[in-house]
Image 1 (cartoon, one colour):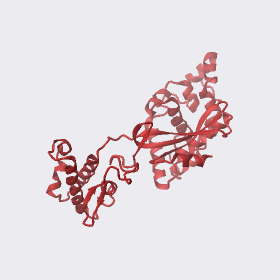
Image 2 (cartoon, helix red, strand yellow):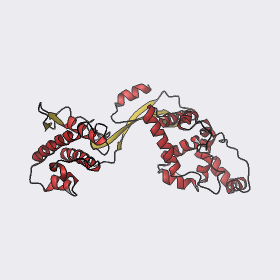
Image 3 (cartoon, helix red, strand yellow):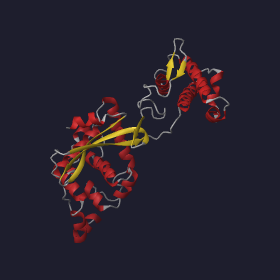
Image 4 (cartoon, one colour):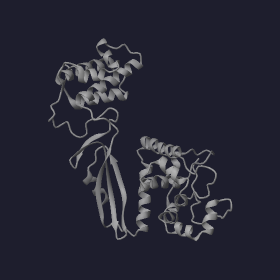
Length: 340
Protein backbone atom coordinates (compact mmCIF):
# COMPACT_ATOMS: atom_id res chain seq x y z
CA UNK A 1 0.00 0.00 0.00
CA UNK A 2 1.33 3.43 -0.94
CA UNK A 3 1.79 6.00 1.84
CA UNK A 4 3.48 9.38 1.55
CA UNK A 5 6.05 10.51 4.09
CA UNK A 6 5.01 13.82 5.67
CA UNK A 7 7.46 13.67 8.58
CA UNK A 8 10.27 15.58 6.88
CA UNK A 9 10.46 18.84 8.82
CA UNK A 10 13.68 20.02 10.44
CA UNK A 11 12.13 20.00 13.93
CA UNK A 12 11.84 16.86 16.00
CA UNK A 13 10.18 15.83 19.26
CA UNK A 14 12.91 15.68 21.91
CA UNK A 15 13.41 12.32 23.58
CA UNK A 16 15.96 11.35 26.23
CA UNK A 17 15.85 7.83 24.77
CA UNK A 18 17.30 9.10 21.51
CA UNK A 19 21.08 9.63 21.76
CA UNK A 20 20.98 11.85 18.67
CA UNK A 21 18.56 14.23 20.38
CA UNK A 22 20.53 14.24 23.62
CA UNK A 23 23.84 14.92 21.86
CA UNK A 24 22.41 17.62 19.63
CA UNK A 25 20.68 19.47 22.47
CA UNK A 26 23.69 19.59 24.78
CA UNK A 27 26.66 20.04 22.46
CA UNK A 28 26.94 23.38 20.64
CA UNK A 29 29.84 22.04 18.53
CA UNK A 30 27.66 19.16 17.32
CA UNK A 31 24.81 21.56 16.64
CA UNK A 32 27.05 23.74 14.48
CA UNK A 33 28.40 20.62 12.79
CA UNK A 34 24.88 19.75 11.70
CA UNK A 35 23.53 23.25 11.00
CA UNK A 36 26.49 24.24 8.80
CA UNK A 37 26.43 21.08 6.70
CA UNK A 38 25.06 20.42 3.24
CA UNK A 39 23.03 17.57 4.73
CA UNK A 40 21.12 20.06 6.89
CA UNK A 41 20.32 22.17 3.83
CA UNK A 42 19.17 19.06 2.01
CA UNK A 43 16.80 18.15 4.84
CA UNK A 44 15.52 21.73 5.07
CA UNK A 45 15.13 22.66 1.39
CA UNK A 46 14.95 19.48 -0.68
CA UNK A 47 13.62 16.43 1.19
CA UNK A 48 10.19 17.96 1.99
CA UNK A 49 9.69 19.01 -1.66
CA UNK A 50 10.24 15.63 -3.29
CA UNK A 51 7.07 14.48 -5.03
CA UNK A 52 6.30 10.90 -4.02
CA UNK A 53 2.85 10.66 -5.61
CA UNK A 54 4.05 9.39 -9.02
CA UNK A 55 5.21 6.16 -7.35
CA UNK A 56 1.77 5.14 -6.06
CA UNK A 57 1.32 3.07 -9.24
CA UNK A 58 3.92 0.60 -7.93
CA UNK A 59 1.84 -0.44 -4.93
CA UNK A 60 -1.44 -2.16 -4.20
CA UNK A 61 -4.57 -0.11 -3.55
CA UNK A 62 -5.66 -2.59 -0.87
CA UNK A 63 -5.01 -2.03 2.83
CA UNK A 64 -1.63 -3.59 3.51
CA UNK A 65 1.79 -2.83 4.91
CA UNK A 66 2.85 0.66 3.75
CA UNK A 67 5.92 1.23 1.62
CA UNK A 68 9.27 2.49 2.83
CA UNK A 69 9.21 6.32 2.49
CA UNK A 70 9.82 7.14 -1.16
CA UNK A 71 11.49 10.51 -0.58
CA UNK A 72 14.03 8.85 1.73
CA UNK A 73 14.65 6.11 -0.85
CA UNK A 74 15.22 8.61 -3.65
CA UNK A 75 17.49 10.67 -1.41
CA UNK A 76 19.47 7.53 -0.59
CA UNK A 77 20.12 6.91 -4.31
CA UNK A 78 21.12 10.56 -4.73
CA UNK A 79 23.57 10.48 -1.80
CA UNK A 80 25.13 7.26 -3.11
CA UNK A 81 26.04 9.20 -6.25
CA UNK A 82 27.01 12.31 -4.27
CA UNK A 83 29.44 10.39 -2.05
CA UNK A 84 30.56 8.08 -4.87
CA UNK A 85 29.86 4.90 -2.88
CA UNK A 86 27.88 1.71 -3.42
CA UNK A 87 24.47 1.11 -1.91
CA UNK A 88 25.93 -1.40 0.53
CA UNK A 89 28.57 1.09 1.69
CA UNK A 90 25.89 3.77 1.96
CA UNK A 91 23.70 1.61 4.20
CA UNK A 92 26.71 0.96 6.44
CA UNK A 93 27.49 4.66 6.58
CA UNK A 94 23.96 5.71 7.48
CA UNK A 95 24.24 3.56 10.63
CA UNK A 96 26.80 5.93 12.18
CA UNK A 97 26.81 9.20 10.21
CA UNK A 98 24.61 11.66 12.13
CA UNK A 99 24.62 14.23 9.33
CA UNK A 100 23.41 11.66 6.85
CA UNK A 101 20.76 10.37 9.20
CA UNK A 102 19.50 13.89 9.71
CA UNK A 103 19.46 14.58 5.95
CA UNK A 104 17.23 11.54 5.39
CA UNK A 105 15.00 12.17 8.40
CA UNK A 106 16.11 8.94 10.06
CA UNK A 107 17.40 10.38 13.33
CA UNK A 108 14.44 8.89 15.21
CA UNK A 109 15.18 5.32 14.07
CA UNK A 110 16.79 3.73 17.12
CA UNK A 111 17.54 0.06 17.77
CA UNK A 112 17.11 -1.10 14.18
CA UNK A 113 18.72 -0.75 10.78
CA UNK A 114 17.54 2.55 9.24
CA UNK A 115 17.90 1.35 5.65
CA UNK A 116 19.21 -1.84 4.08
CA UNK A 117 20.63 -2.56 0.67
CA UNK A 118 17.94 -5.11 -0.15
CA UNK A 119 15.20 -2.50 0.35
CA UNK A 120 16.91 -0.22 -2.18
CA UNK A 121 17.29 -3.07 -4.67
CA UNK A 122 13.64 -4.13 -4.41
CA UNK A 123 12.42 -0.60 -4.97
CA UNK A 124 14.61 -0.24 -8.05
CA UNK A 125 13.36 -3.59 -9.35
CA UNK A 126 9.79 -2.33 -9.02
CA UNK A 127 10.66 0.77 -11.03
CA UNK A 128 12.44 -1.23 -13.73
CA UNK A 129 9.51 -3.65 -14.08
CA UNK A 130 7.10 -0.74 -14.37
CA UNK A 131 9.26 0.90 -17.05
CA UNK A 132 9.40 -2.35 -19.04
CA UNK A 133 5.59 -2.57 -18.93
CA UNK A 134 4.72 1.07 -19.62
CA UNK A 135 7.86 2.75 -21.01
CA UNK A 136 7.74 5.34 -18.21
CA UNK A 137 10.95 5.84 -16.20
CA UNK A 138 9.81 6.99 -12.77
CA UNK A 139 13.33 7.23 -11.37
CA UNK A 140 14.44 9.53 -14.19
CA UNK A 141 11.44 11.79 -13.59
CA UNK A 142 12.24 11.95 -9.87
CA UNK A 143 15.94 12.72 -10.43
CA UNK A 144 15.06 15.54 -12.83
CA UNK A 145 12.62 16.97 -10.27
CA UNK A 146 15.23 16.87 -7.50
CA UNK A 147 17.68 18.65 -9.80
CA UNK A 148 15.10 21.36 -10.45
CA UNK A 149 14.64 21.91 -6.72
CA UNK A 150 18.41 22.20 -6.25
CA UNK A 151 18.68 24.52 -9.24
CA UNK A 152 16.12 26.88 -7.72
CA UNK A 153 17.90 26.87 -4.36
CA UNK A 154 21.20 27.68 -6.10
CA UNK A 155 19.67 30.56 -8.06
CA UNK A 156 20.45 29.02 -11.48
CA UNK A 157 18.24 30.48 -14.20
CA UNK A 158 19.04 27.90 -16.89
CA UNK A 159 20.36 30.35 -19.47
CA UNK A 160 23.84 28.80 -19.44
CA UNK A 161 23.83 25.12 -20.31
CA UNK A 162 26.47 22.66 -21.45
CA UNK A 163 26.27 19.08 -22.56
CA UNK A 164 28.69 16.18 -22.34
CA UNK A 165 28.66 12.43 -22.62
CA UNK A 166 30.32 9.56 -20.83
CA UNK A 167 30.74 5.89 -21.53
CA UNK A 168 29.22 3.18 -19.33
CA UNK A 169 31.11 -0.05 -19.86
CA UNK A 170 29.10 -3.26 -20.11
CA UNK A 171 30.36 -6.24 -18.11
CA UNK A 172 31.20 -8.28 -21.19
CA UNK A 173 34.27 -9.78 -22.83
CA UNK A 174 35.62 -8.49 -26.11
CA UNK A 175 34.75 -11.21 -28.61
CA UNK A 176 36.17 -11.84 -32.07
CA UNK A 177 33.69 -12.45 -34.86
CA UNK A 178 34.43 -16.15 -34.59
CA UNK A 179 33.94 -16.02 -30.83
CA UNK A 180 30.65 -14.19 -31.20
CA UNK A 181 29.24 -16.69 -33.70
CA UNK A 182 30.52 -19.66 -31.71
CA UNK A 183 28.96 -18.39 -28.46
CA UNK A 184 25.56 -17.85 -30.07
CA UNK A 185 25.68 -21.36 -31.56
CA UNK A 186 26.73 -22.89 -28.26
CA UNK A 187 23.95 -21.15 -26.31
CA UNK A 188 21.32 -22.56 -28.66
CA UNK A 189 22.74 -26.09 -28.53
CA UNK A 190 22.77 -25.94 -24.73
CA UNK A 191 19.13 -24.85 -24.80
CA UNK A 192 18.31 -27.80 -27.06
CA UNK A 193 20.01 -30.13 -24.59
CA UNK A 194 18.14 -28.59 -21.65
CA UNK A 195 14.85 -29.21 -23.48
CA UNK A 196 15.82 -32.82 -24.37
CA UNK A 197 15.79 -32.12 -28.10
CA UNK A 198 17.38 -34.59 -30.51
CA UNK A 199 20.64 -32.89 -31.49
CA UNK A 200 22.57 -33.46 -34.71
CA UNK A 201 25.76 -35.37 -33.98
CA UNK A 202 27.82 -32.64 -35.68
CA UNK A 203 26.63 -30.19 -33.00
CA UNK A 204 27.31 -32.28 -29.90
CA UNK A 205 30.84 -30.89 -29.54
CA UNK A 206 29.31 -27.64 -28.28
CA UNK A 207 28.30 -29.48 -25.10
CA UNK A 208 31.83 -30.67 -24.30
CA UNK A 209 33.96 -28.89 -21.70
CA UNK A 210 36.83 -27.03 -23.29
CA UNK A 211 35.32 -27.11 -26.78
CA UNK A 212 35.61 -23.34 -27.21
CA UNK A 213 39.40 -23.45 -26.76
CA UNK A 214 39.61 -26.49 -29.02
CA UNK A 215 37.79 -24.70 -31.83
CA UNK A 216 39.40 -21.29 -31.33
CA UNK A 217 43.02 -22.17 -30.57
CA UNK A 218 43.85 -25.85 -31.05
CA UNK A 219 42.22 -26.58 -34.39
CA UNK A 220 44.52 -26.86 -37.43
CA UNK A 221 42.03 -24.93 -39.55
CA UNK A 222 42.64 -21.30 -40.49
CA UNK A 223 40.43 -18.64 -38.95
CA UNK A 224 38.46 -18.29 -42.19
CA UNK A 225 37.91 -22.06 -42.36
CA UNK A 226 36.74 -22.13 -38.74
CA UNK A 227 34.17 -19.45 -39.49
CA UNK A 228 32.89 -21.41 -42.51
CA UNK A 229 32.36 -24.46 -40.26
CA UNK A 230 30.63 -22.43 -37.54
CA UNK A 231 28.30 -20.80 -40.10
CA UNK A 232 27.33 -24.21 -41.52
CA UNK A 233 26.59 -25.37 -37.98
CA UNK A 234 24.53 -22.23 -37.38
CA UNK A 235 22.30 -23.16 -40.32
CA UNK A 236 21.82 -26.65 -38.89
CA UNK A 237 20.87 -25.09 -35.54
CA UNK A 238 18.25 -22.86 -37.19
CA UNK A 239 16.82 -25.86 -39.05
CA UNK A 240 16.61 -27.80 -35.79
CA UNK A 241 14.98 -24.87 -34.00
CA UNK A 242 12.24 -24.63 -36.61
CA UNK A 243 9.48 -22.36 -35.35
CA UNK A 244 9.57 -23.53 -31.74
CA UNK A 245 12.23 -21.15 -30.43
CA UNK A 246 11.25 -17.81 -31.95
CA UNK A 247 10.66 -16.35 -28.47
CA UNK A 248 13.94 -17.66 -27.07
CA UNK A 249 16.56 -14.98 -26.37
CA UNK A 250 19.29 -17.36 -27.54
CA UNK A 251 17.46 -17.81 -30.85
CA UNK A 252 17.02 -14.06 -31.24
CA UNK A 253 20.72 -13.53 -30.57
CA UNK A 254 21.75 -16.12 -33.15
CA UNK A 255 19.47 -14.83 -35.89
CA UNK A 256 20.56 -11.27 -35.16
CA UNK A 257 24.29 -11.99 -35.31
CA UNK A 258 23.83 -13.89 -38.58
CA UNK A 259 21.81 -11.02 -40.02
CA UNK A 260 24.39 -8.43 -38.95
CA UNK A 261 27.61 -10.31 -39.68
CA UNK A 262 26.73 -12.36 -42.74
CA UNK A 263 25.39 -12.33 -46.26
CA UNK A 264 23.01 -15.10 -47.27
CA UNK A 265 22.57 -16.52 -50.77
CA UNK A 266 19.46 -17.91 -52.45
CA UNK A 267 20.16 -21.38 -51.04
CA UNK A 268 20.33 -20.08 -47.47
CA UNK A 269 24.11 -20.39 -47.13
CA UNK A 270 25.86 -17.82 -44.94
CA UNK A 271 29.13 -16.06 -45.75
CA UNK A 272 30.89 -13.58 -43.50
CA UNK A 273 30.78 -9.92 -44.54
CA UNK A 274 34.03 -8.12 -45.18
CA UNK A 275 35.33 -6.02 -42.28
CA UNK A 276 34.89 -2.80 -44.23
CA UNK A 277 31.22 -3.45 -44.95
CA UNK A 278 29.28 -0.24 -44.10
CA UNK A 279 26.50 -2.25 -42.45
CA UNK A 280 28.94 -3.30 -39.70
CA UNK A 281 28.30 -0.15 -37.71
CA UNK A 282 28.36 0.63 -33.97
CA UNK A 283 24.90 -0.86 -33.40
CA UNK A 284 25.84 -4.50 -34.10
CA UNK A 285 25.85 -7.00 -31.25
CA UNK A 286 29.03 -7.09 -29.16
CA UNK A 287 28.14 -10.03 -26.93
CA UNK A 288 25.09 -12.27 -26.35
CA UNK A 289 25.62 -11.73 -22.62
CA UNK A 290 24.41 -8.15 -23.09
CA UNK A 291 22.89 -7.89 -26.58
CA UNK A 292 21.91 -4.24 -26.10
CA UNK A 293 25.52 -3.09 -25.58
CA UNK A 294 27.05 -1.28 -28.54
CA UNK A 295 30.47 -0.10 -29.67
CA UNK A 296 31.82 3.42 -29.56
CA UNK A 297 35.22 5.02 -29.88
CA UNK A 298 35.88 8.15 -27.84
CA UNK A 299 39.14 9.98 -27.13
CA UNK A 300 41.07 7.24 -28.90
CA UNK A 301 39.67 4.45 -26.70
CA UNK A 302 37.25 1.68 -27.60
CA UNK A 303 34.16 1.19 -25.44
CA UNK A 304 31.52 -1.53 -25.40
CA UNK A 305 28.42 -0.65 -23.48
CA UNK A 306 26.19 2.41 -23.31
CA UNK A 307 26.32 6.17 -23.73
CA UNK A 308 25.15 8.58 -21.02
CA UNK A 309 24.43 12.13 -22.17
CA UNK A 310 24.08 14.83 -19.52
CA UNK A 311 23.00 18.47 -19.48
CA UNK A 312 24.51 20.76 -16.85
CA UNK A 313 23.08 24.18 -16.04
CA UNK A 314 25.56 26.69 -14.65
CA UNK A 315 25.23 29.83 -12.52
CA UNK A 316 27.30 32.00 -10.23
CA UNK A 317 26.93 29.52 -7.36
CA UNK A 318 28.06 26.52 -9.37
CA UNK A 319 26.46 24.03 -11.70
CA UNK A 320 24.17 21.03 -11.48
CA UNK A 321 23.21 18.23 -13.87
CA UNK A 322 19.54 18.79 -14.64
CA UNK A 323 18.87 15.95 -17.09
CA UNK A 324 20.46 12.80 -18.45
CA UNK A 325 19.82 10.12 -21.01
CA UNK A 326 21.27 6.60 -21.05
CA UNK A 327 20.82 4.97 -24.43
CA UNK A 328 22.11 2.08 -26.49
CA UNK A 329 23.24 4.61 -29.07
CA UNK A 330 22.56 8.29 -28.60
CA UNK A 331 22.80 11.32 -30.83
CA UNK A 332 24.38 13.90 -28.53
CA UNK A 333 23.31 16.89 -30.62
CA UNK A 334 19.71 15.70 -30.84
CA UNK A 335 19.54 15.19 -27.07
CA UNK A 336 20.96 18.67 -26.36
CA UNK A 337 18.56 20.33 -28.81
CA UNK A 338 15.65 18.95 -26.79
CA UNK A 339 16.95 20.81 -23.75
CA UNK A 340 17.44 24.19 -25.44
